[in-house]
Length: 93
Image (cartoon, rainbow, N blue to C red):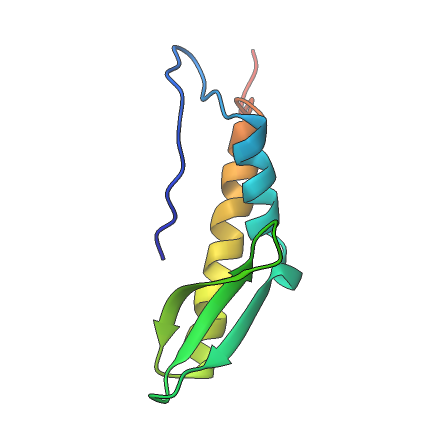
């Protein structure tokens, strides 16, 4: 699944806007996702936007495939939110 967003230039760490963080937080919650069956038999993963409109994101042949796509998207955006908090200290001397 590919979602597009705008980024800013930075010199040391990513500068993510509040609007982008708000969108990522919405993507990272499973309650904002659903799976629908299309007339052709495929399953579509959808998320709800801030205007209560459902947006189709990806199509899969099975329900399990659609669930996996949603789970991987949630994991991806949780990682992005964690990285947006700033650098992580892994070792000090």
